[in-house]
Structure formats: C-alpha cells, structure tokens
Length: 407
Image (cartoon, rainbow, N blue to C red; front, top):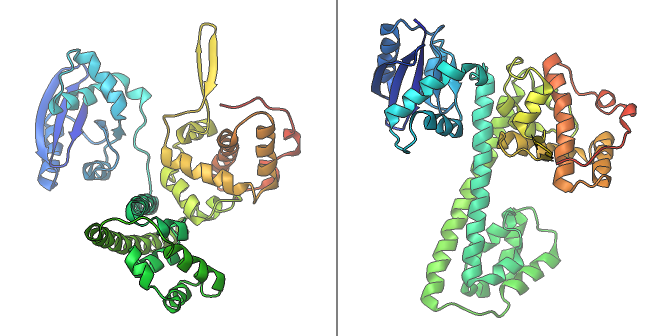
C-alpha cells in the first residue's frame, strides 16, 4: 500500500497523519519531540506497511531535529513552504478553521496529489551542514549587533546627542570604547585628553592628534539636558548596552573564525573562492544556501531563480511585464548582491557589464542583480564541473551587445 506522512511540527510535540493513495486518513497521532516520539512515528508508519524507501514525509521546516532523524533513517523528506500549505488547506476547509492534526493531514495529502511539483530535501554532506550552521549564525549575530547599535543610537539621541556628533559611526571599536569612559554628559565633562589618547591607542587609533581634539570638543559642547535622575538612568542603560555590544563583537569575531576554518576544509572552497569578489565569508554563505549536492539544480536557471537574481514574467492577455523576484532565498540573494558589488572593483568584465546595464537605464540595485544573475550562472557551471573561475570564459568578447532594461 502506498502511503504518505505529514508532520505538523511544534516546539513541544508533533502531530502526525498518514494518508493512503485514495486520500483516506489511516492514522493520526501526537508524539513528543524526543527519541520515544520518533520511535512511535516509525512504528506507526510500519503498522501501515510503510518503509523509509517508500514513504515520503512532508513537514513545514528543514531545520527540526525530527527532520535530521528522518533523513538519517532513510526517509525522503519534503520541506513544504507554509504559504503553499495555507493554499492547500483551502481545498479541504473553506470556513477558516484550523487545527494541528488537520494540518498534518493536509501535508500528507500534498505529497499524495502533488509530490511531483515539490522538491525533496537536498542531500547535504556533514561538512556543508556545519558550514551552513556557522554561516547563518554568523549572519544572525551581525544582524543582532546592528540592531543593538540602532537601539544605542536611539538612547543617545534621547539624552546625549553630543556623542552621536562625536561618533557618527558607532560600529567602530574606538567609538564604543570612548563612550564607555563617557557614557553621559556629566562623564564627558570629566573626560581628560590623556584618557582619550590612551583609549584610542588601545584601539589602534593613537596617531591622530586632531581626532582627540575633535572628540573632546564634540562631547563637551553645550547641549540641552535631561533631569539629573533621568540622565543617571539612561547612563546606566548606555553602559549596559556597551557591554552587550562588546560581547557581541567578540562573538561575531569568534563565529567568523570558526566559519573560515570549517569552510576551508570543504572540497568546494577553492572553486567558490576563485571568482573575483568572493571572499571566504561570502563564499561560505553561498555554499551554505546552495549546498554541495551537484544534482540539486539541474540548470543554471534553477539556481538563479532560487537566489532571486532571475526576474519574473507576468503575462495575461495583452498585459506583459517583467519584475524582480520577491519569493526567493533571501540569504543567498544577499550574498550574491554583495558579491556583485565587490566584483565591480575586482573584475574588468563585471564592471563593464554593470556599466552597460546602467547605461541601458537600470538603477543601481537592478544592475547589480543583473550582474549577479550573470555571474551566478557561471558559478553554477564551475560547481557542476569542479572547475575554478575563468575570467576569459566568464566575459567573452562577443558579449558586447546592447541589452534591454532589466526588472
């Protein structure tokens, strides 16, 4: 008997549904997220004549531990986009009602009826999975660091705008180090030139005497003030946030070092770092999102669509227009954007292509997206064939033709 399995996952439990080829729900169950629950899932599948080789499993994530266990057991797992599941749900329920057990049945039916239009979880090596974990956490740490810097700016603007004038860019280590010694207007008035010089020297900025004078002048400039008790409270807030930022900066540095080490051990590292503009961090992010399964993307267009560099065409009747792709892997798209930007100063061919797109009417982001689309296609070929980047092949002389404006 052909059966399909759907899992509606949650933090503390999973709902399971097993459906046969006729659409009949053979079993429903709620299991825990540990070893006992996974054993119950295997027993339930076996009771209905299922097996790892013949029973596909649908779930709305690719990161849960149950997914790892299913893949290790030999099951083919299909991670289904929650937006797609929401549309499938409307096939069975028009009232808007929703339950976890019903969602599990919907997922099982997705594979029963439309398995051919969904992609199974790609086969990824343990090395690539480690790079993916580090690359994503490194990027998340950077985003969290930037968010905390924005919060610090907001607090400083509330009672200490002189600090923002002295340090427009709070990402610099020297800026947060000096602020640690002068976290309020009162503390700034007590700050000495000798103290600032010592702090800047520790941060590698000790040879700029004019910078010291500018910092002291800006921090001690007359300004409007909050009441004394409010200033004390906000000073404590700033000190706490500076401590958090320092810890986050250290975490980002440590994660980047671990990411570089893990990426360097992967066999595709020489290929991914061969294109101009692709350093170890961006290359690791691309490997993290693309994976190392050579059969995952049968064509370059598939990879381009996954990254969102390829445009989308909408045609209906006499209406026909092309627009940028919004549904995409945003992490891969972000890495390709910065790769294209870095390539402008590293590759004459990339610069020429970008300039032609701009001359054709593309704005900056559209021109970069078009350039990334071009380079990603070449990178697909390099990964497919295990060959390093060749500038001559990437930018042949016969490509000097006018182009239309891209989305």
